[in-house]
Length: 113
Length: 114
Image (cartoon, rainbow over all chains, first blue to last red; front, side):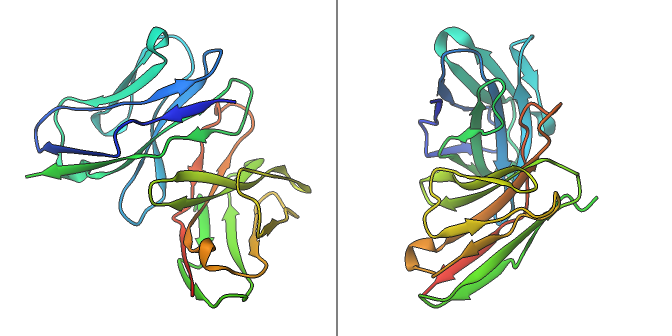
């Protein structure tokens, strides 16, 4: 069975600083990979996804993520964080052909002015 | 399109009471699911469905029932509420083809069981 690890429970950054949120997965083949964002009191919204091809994927709100097969990682990055990026971020993995994703436990992003 | 809608947004129950959380989607998605979100636990799958008349258990199904009589609706029933079911519940949907498993989430229902 696949699993997802988000090692950081909380991340604090200053507004304007760069951001990297870590995600590691465990799965034999190349899975489908996702990052979702949850603003306070809201449901989850898809930021970006990776299925195949270019390992650097672009998403909404200026986010990008890089798939590294050798490290089983799919880290989320943003070059300059805005106060409105404060939210909970979830990494998810789904084996190819499966419709049931597994979610990580989430990373809470705190942005200082 | 309204997307995925959930009602109610907030609910307080007493131990032993039953209730139904409603979920509806207008995107004609075959796959629907229910998650609960607890602090530090992420999202845990309760039940899911791949079409009308087809449901299956997820990771934490005990104490919950589901049915899927139409493509649009996927209600979650709490049979006899317990304080351990205090949580935020999310419904999600996804087309089985073409989306590579991207999930569309509702806004959630915050449930408190006293």
